[in-house]
Image (cartoon, rainbow, N blue to C red; front, side, top):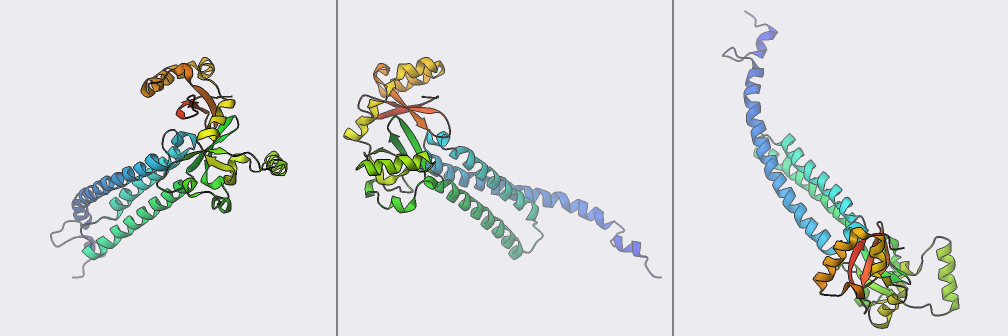
Length: 277
């Protein structure tokens, strides 16, 4: 007797094939969950190492807030950490041949590492390179703002390095009236000002640093306008073992409103959140 087509859906013991599949699904799900969990732990470990590099060297406090690096990095890492283990859970099947299984997991790892590498490269390119003291303010200058050709004119001591954080620099005076007019006219038209011109940079020390005190105001003026920063300022003074009445401040131009706190030698003692203008 010919078997009907419906008989193809039954095994020799007359149990439906889909019942067998239901029996094996929990086993596959359990194995895939274990593999994805291990992958998640590895991904979190890699993310922590990347965070140590980004926030320890490229975006130290408070530049991670001044330059917006924290949000960009967290978005990149969150996507990377979630997508890798999720792909592992979808693709992992212990019934696959070992070679095919390792090929699938290897491709997932390569995609994840490639995405993380691209994200770190993007964060690295956008990192703040200089904190420039420009007359009556400080400016945070990131990599994309600067002209790569003018960067080559910097002395070795001021050359950005991947293992260095942002450097504080001062600005030299224009050589003559023609140079002053050239910068002024370009900045008025929306072009580069002194802070965006590395050829004007000087080490922030000695007389060049002391020039910042000419426009600085007593820190008490800032604290009167921002009483919410009183506790932070006094805690900072306690950590430095300094008299807060001797400190002055200058505004910091960045994505958020902050001020740089200076001592009487024009050395930066810390930063406080708030509009300094």
